[in-house]
Image (tube, rainbow, N blue to C red; front, side, top):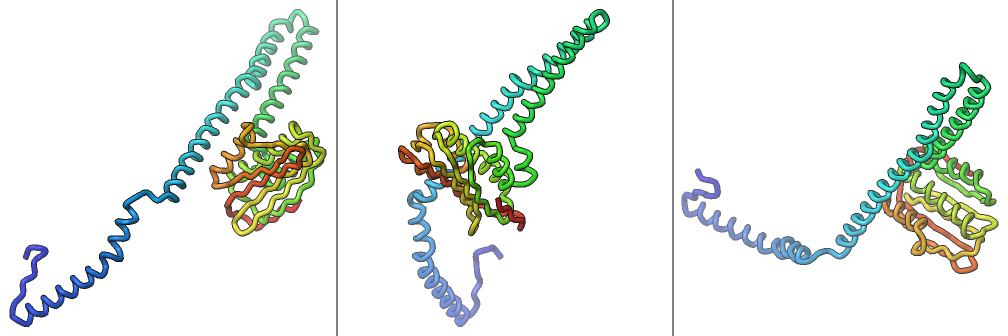
Amino acid sequence: MPYGFVTVSGRQSALAAGAEASALMAVGAWLVPRTIVPHLRAGSGPDPDLAGRVQQLTETRGHAVDAAAAELRRIERDLHDGAQARLVALGMNLRAVERVLPGSPSAALALVAEARETSVRALNELRDLIRGICPPVLADRGLGHAVHALVLDTPLPTALEIDLPGRPSPPVESACYFAIAEALANAVKHAGARSAQIRIRHSAGLLRIEVSDDGIGGADPALGTGLQGVERRLGTFDGILAVNSPPGGPTMIVMELPCALSSPKTCSC
């Protein structure tokens, strides 16, 4: 029997089939305006909220790609101009030592000393490069300890209040660490601050970071690339950056990122 056809035998069967068909038509008449029509109306034009969200995700993805490409170029440039150049000089010094050692041991010793200094500078540059990519303390011990180490290396007296009952994901930790480093560097280099304060806490699935200083103020993300880069980095994780920095100060920078914590360990600094 072909699909879509029903064979009816007898008067009662025909009446039953007609009643069933009428019931199905009634149900269909009730469902159409409640399902298909609203769906068609909803699809008649773009959803502005959805369109805005798609636009935001497109922009943050573009910023993330650009930032990653710029970071790779920076690493390549630093390796080429720094450690690679030092290692090339080291190899040239060692070849010179081989040439002069038989006839002039004193000159060879001087070249060896120079080669040793070159190797030390190359090693320091590699260490600085590694810290610029991902500080070892950040990877090993987490955001709280990394920020504590950052403050110890900063000449500006900085108070810390950190309450993290766990660790965010590594990409979020990295974004937050470099955002704090940028805000602290601005306080030292541009604001002329005498003191600063950093607060980090996590509550209800939201990581909130506050960096404040008593400097001259005037910080504006629209006027410099540093805070713009922070804003774009945080935007990759649906984070936000808010800056309150009136002329004369003080400056308050607030960062918020939705994230989960991975372990129950607490860092209180």
